[in-house]
Length: 544
Ligand code: VG1
Ligand code: CO
Image (tube, rainbow, N blue to C red; front, top):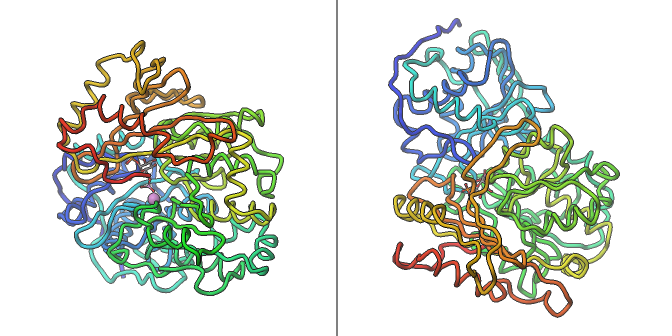
């Protein structure tokens, strides 16, 4: 059946500015007539010639995923794409989408996700575009999308017809375009096989080493079951909450001690398995736990780097590490000891792409439970889990032993992030402006002289692009640090993030409670920013 290409008149929405990771809004915003279509047309208008190209498409399975995918397929056909590769049932985790783009040499990919933000009819939805290296579009491209979204007058779409059946793998046709429905797990699981010592992990698990992976009712369930249970032989039931639900079971699939509380409680109980982990809504984040041990994401990055010789896919080819600015400096200390590069970038995975492409960095991480490497161009939750299992299999020590040994060797970077969610946006902006407008250098913060106070700017060492205003840093003479920035992923009000860290050495200083060690900094930060006065409270919503 031939399908006509329609040019539909529309008017711009003023609010389609991509944030840290794509465009995120309430589902109800995306359900407005033309809203999704306007943004998708803005993507297609900003990425160069789409004629004859291959696009990858999939999402984390949240509510509105199915509807949005059918619309995007019709628009891709009308915009000249030759082929769209879609995960079965419209599913692809974020790292798997990155993997498929690379594995199939696609022009790019559209990922439908609002990550860990709650889903369902009243939850959030999101959309982002990844370029041909598999990574998030750089700022120059997202800015072009925003600019287009403010002026577009029409979009192109095939007229309505029968929906493409996404429940069966295989090829179908939509006008002149081919739709290829693939198994969402296979390419990704095959890639993991090439990176890690799967036999060693299999032996570890066969020997009675117990694990619990919490998929939090989101996208990683099918991936974790295939890899951990089917391929590596973990007993059935090692993966919990493994069926992706459109509303994520009403939960908040953010793998941290607050939102993955059941898993955290288990790991600190007498029944704890040897290893625990969780991932987020779209599968790019991870939390790593041992029995009675929580590994901070910043430490996890440093430890993976320090142990990279155990990982077959990386042995002998590690060039360096990159971390987002608010991530602790623990990985830098390892890089220095190993004679490797280290980079400090703004928040958001898009800033790692050029460094990975140029082979300047091999591992990357963010304090927000994101870890990854040059195997794809996104952070990757299950990858981090497998890296840890590989290290545990090689060293035959517990998670606690590995972490403590790391601190003994490199010192411990005590670290915490305090989030204040749903603040009044104008007041939060005022706080940032005030902080930018003064210099604290020469004064004291938490009892130490301030040696640096700036607003972080980054010049990409590969392409020279510059990003300003990436967060306030206040550093004291002992290398302790307070970072203050506003979130770029929220959908209501403003979220203020305070990041604090302090490095300690010496056996007697390594095993204390982070909130206690950082107590004076926490207190001083609240006072300095006058949080209670501005917002009526200085109690954070989430502490990680
Ligand atoms: C947060 C994190 C950032 C991460 C981003 C996307 O951004 O801080 O490190 O890259 O989320 O992660 P922000 O601007 O809210 O601080 V994901 O898993 O939500 O795609
Ligand atoms: Co995510």
